[in-house]
Amino acid sequence: MTTPACRNSPHSPVPERHARLSCSVAPSRILTLILAAALLQGLLLLWLAPLPWYIALALVVPVLAYAILEWHRIVSTSGVISTRERRWFWRPDGAEGGEIFLLGELVLWSWVVVVNSRDPRGRRLRLVLARDSMSADDWRRLRAALQYSR
Image (cartoon, rainbow, N blue to C red):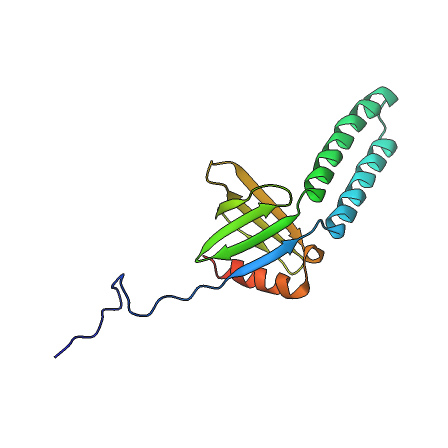
């Protein structure tokens, strides 16, 4: 008489199934427009504030520097995000990619996804992806994979 294989056995006769995903990511126009609106709002606030002109002018420099930094981050977010066997990978365009480890909470809204992660060297990587960053089918599949990844 044979005994059935235990469900807790690491050597199960039926291998687990894992979804495979590969999504091409492009820079988002939505995020660029939101950044432009925030920049205009910040500059308008400084213009209308009852501040001496030299203080207002000194505050314009960090506002513009922050906008340039964020714009660079938005336009450099292009590459391929993929998953294989419950492992996540990010490969930026023009660079060698590698495995990433998801950290903390994920933002999974209908129009934006924020993926907090680290690479194997411990460097932090935050991907902010808007709905127009990829095709509609890839967007749906990415949100579903992230939702069920934990």
